[in-house]
Amino acid sequence: MKKYSVFAVAREAMRHHTGWTRAWRDAAPKKRYDAIIIGAGGHGLATAYYLGKNFGITNVAILEKGWLGGGNTGRNTTIIRSNYLQDPSAAIFEKSRSLYETMSQDINYNVMFSPRGVIMLAQTEHEVRGYKRTAHANMLQGVKTEFVSPARVKELLPIINLDGPRYPVLGGLWQARGGTARHDAVAWGYARACSDMGMDVIQQCEVTGIRSEGGKVTGVSTSRGDIACDKLGIVVAGHSGQLAEMAGFRLPLESVALQALVSEPIKPCMDVVVMANTVHGYMSQSDKGEMVIGGGTDGYNNFTQRGAFQHIEETVRALIETFPMVSRLKMLRQWGGIVDMTGDRSPILSKTPVEGIFINSGWGTGGFKAIPGSGWGMAELMAKGHSPLTDAFGLERFSEGRFIDESVAAGVAH
Amino acid sequence: MLIVSCPCCGVTAEETEFHAHGEAHITRHAMDASDEQMETYLFMRKNPKGVHFERWRHQNGCGKWFHMARDTATLEVFGTYSAQTLAPPEDLLAEIDAKRPGWRDRA
Image (cartoon, rainbow over all chains, first blue to last red; front, side, top):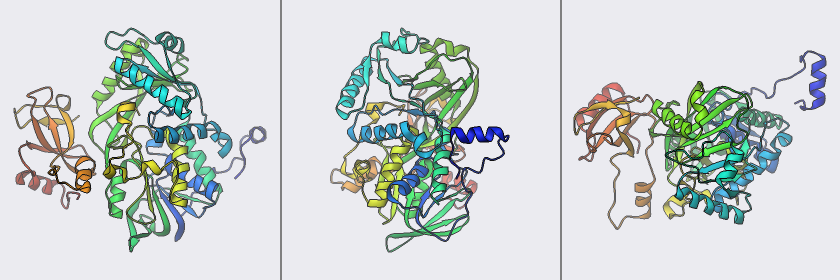
């Protein structure tokens, strides 16, 4: 792999960009690997990357049913923040956010991390109290957030209408070091780094069965043949339940559609990320100038990667009240992804009833921000059997009643 | 957009009149339930990619609860039936068998 640098750009500029090589190898499956990761999205690739980087395990395959980063990694609204209420969540999301800060240097791939700040609007008295509590919790957790006044919100967001008739803005939870990153670049950069370590990123390879003997995993059957492995990581978001069924265990998950949309590109008007959880809408402006808008999930189980139109309408209707200028925008595209929701709205990073199989799922509507932290913890879990980042997120928490309850703390927009 | 017929009041309307409330026919165990039974009741869901039986409410209509059989992979609605039952009716199951040969309910 050639290193990307300013000198490489200058050199290629001299020769009409004819010297760029493939970023990663398009590998064919081998007969056996030390570890297989199912799912070449952000979380799967990050898991593989940190298995190699932190633990020296490089005989690894990452299997992908479709194409690299073609699932939720390429469908989200790229928001990165770590202002969670519960300690285990704050730990893994803050680890993740801090890894994003140095990711471009670490993997030698520009992921365009933009720490522009995230403001979560408090539009009811309950939200004011909730966010003040979160700000206090974050202070104890070492996550820098603050509760700010409506005047400060207006300063950060000149386009906002503070005194909307239904939901006036009463303040906000401000995380100055949150922001966005280029989602595709995260997948591509990790894939390139994994490939460079000798790992095989195998696309168009659907897992059709999981084989085990005596309660221990022995390999997987795929659309491109059987592959043996010692350890297996299932990192696939919406289809986690289908893969768990192949391995013979159940998961406390439900899959629903989450939609997003972008407007036509306009001149810069908003340089922070804004989330309005009471009305289920969040928005940021991309580098191209499009307003990137996300809403709440559809109400019913769904595997179709498209959602119902009325949810888009609800989201836009709510945003127009708080951001009147949105009403003049044409919307360009709308799409959906399938997210897997747990009962406590916190993820599952866990061993499973089958020895050697590990699962990373249940990120719900907030997986993108967690990619590096999730990969870091999952790699440690797979290599050592436990990790301080993931210990609280085990499957057993549901039977033990030991929840990490973020459904109340974070509302819908996770 | 789903088109739904309410078996309680007979109205056929688009999904905005209704609200989904998750998997149907979940067993609620008695006070002496084991931890595993409680976990299953509270959190474990079939979440099938395919035929799904679920609870709905005619929220902006008659207000009554009912059950629906729907395909989560195609969003086809197979039919609706009374909430006062422990299992889907036979004629609806036969219709699903005809449309989805070989389908099975996930354990």
